Image (cartoon, rainbow, N blue to C red; front, side):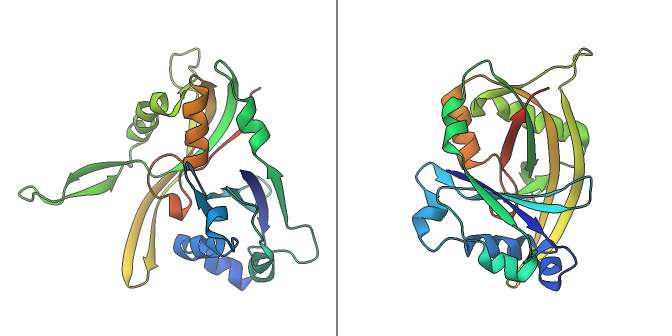
Length: 221
């Protein structure tokens, strides 16, 4: 596995197109892999996420089974005069995970629940969870199966900060897609290292093709 960070130049027209459409960004990320097995393998798939730093710089993060070539993104949406992207081996971090470790984390996810389309309909569809309490509960209910638990603050509440809660509307061909997303920052503790590795490599929740599901780690404290 590899972890890549790409710096986007939001002033460029191509960048604005990608930033405005998760479907277009998905296609651009997919184009970074010539071999299908570098994009997706058993137990590992390519995930991506957009982050905006305090400096208002925009970064694209990618985890992938194979090493990506983002030359096309540099030409379309990057900074050709600088080192626009860096790719590092992700395997060392994955192998180092042990139960009891504490990590700071970030996750942009698509928290949803299933419900009937109408009161008298038998068909179901996914609805985004828009209330912060429901978004927190969505993550907490999935943590154990993904091999981690969210740390608790002194007041007993989960050590989480939610931001960039939004509903995205974009087109996928002739189809209109609506996607509710939120970004979680917090502290977690590894409970089951193998299950946690699977979550890091396979993603969490729905909307993975559209910038959701990628959980990244940093040293806690």
